[in-house]
Length: 137
Length: 463
Image (cartoon, rainbow over all chains, first blue to last red; front, side, top):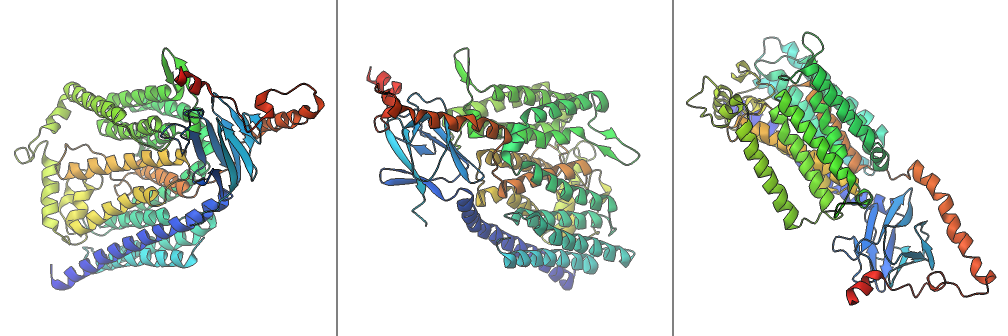
């Protein structure tokens, strides 16, 4: 293959490499814009326990004592898999998934309930507050 | 569209890549009639342009997978049109369009995971119907159904996306456990195991043994994500058990494999280069001949070898375009399946679905590329988005659409739950006015939110 043909091959390979790089950057930029969209979808809420806030980062949040739970509460009064939070149409719902001590929202025992801002959720002996997210980093 | 400038830039770079490739074909390619090159140029650039104009109308949240998809599909069209001399391959162009349409179908079907999750039983039925079709129409030693002189379909390919959907699960679904003997099991997991076992047996019966690792990979990824939910924290025990089971199954498979498969497993391609090792020996010679930058589009000899455009397509691309191009093509494919790692899905269902798709594509790529390079036995599995084959292309497009759906999800309330929800809010509303009306003290659970009852778990532990 003569030099001109070799250069042509190298140029097309380089164009492909650059294109892949640009698409990788595009994908990375979409990640940050995706975060903003999720905050809109999830109404930018969090669960607060004492002085700690748990951001709600996916559409199913498992609350429990188990190490795999999304919100892990180190309290023996909380079941391993206690309750689950779901989001749909920007509204969060809490569902008791067969816990032993039950789920209370504002003091009322519930099996499933749609949550509103500043609702107090009691799981076992622990109280969690459903509120607007404060950590905005 | 969050960033129109990024969209335009991505479009320009994809067009630029295809443009330089086409210019390379024009400058270095082997062709008798220059019109063939111009037709190819018009088809590739035209498809790019139409796709980029149509895409914003779907109002997706992300477009990275779409850009990579059109990049690799049109690269595949250029490669396929150059094998053995430049000639526009209309059939491959049609399959590329079919893949893009299938991608849209996959996107619309899977973007709302609650909707597709509700159709679980329908998915199982569809897999059953496809297995029935295989049983009735393909016969015991074939995997194709002929639809005419040059058209045929492979029904087992359609099982792949359905199996991915059947294996995907949500955290809520995994909480529905039932007591079976002394184990807490999720019935769906048992049904899924039965489905996968049936599918693999059918593949064995059809002698499509190359697809079994793909189905196995989809199931293993789904199975691990089912037992290690919700954060996918893998504990050692299930992984050791899964790997040990796979090793045992592989050994059993080798022992009971048909003679022609065992011959392929232990073939020395250089000693038997005119027999069982012919394709691999030629493929290796082709890759070596091509070097880094290839012999030039259309200047190879691998187009004389059987399955040059499907099973050993990696070697054919390496020969004509160079190892650099073929490796970069594989890198683009890997980028498509790795996108969920860059922008993680927001639902567990979509996450497990992406894992299944990544497993399927990765295993297919590995079998095709390593098979071409004689690193593993030759299986005859296609390279997604590049190999010739309508069914494979459409199914790969569908699975790419499922990846797009995971990147641009919709979280809608299911209709059934809406109906169930109606009586539920009424309970606390009825309960709340009761305390002031009743003189007797209320049970502590309803009256004292700050003092909930001591859990049974706590009591048990104290004992």
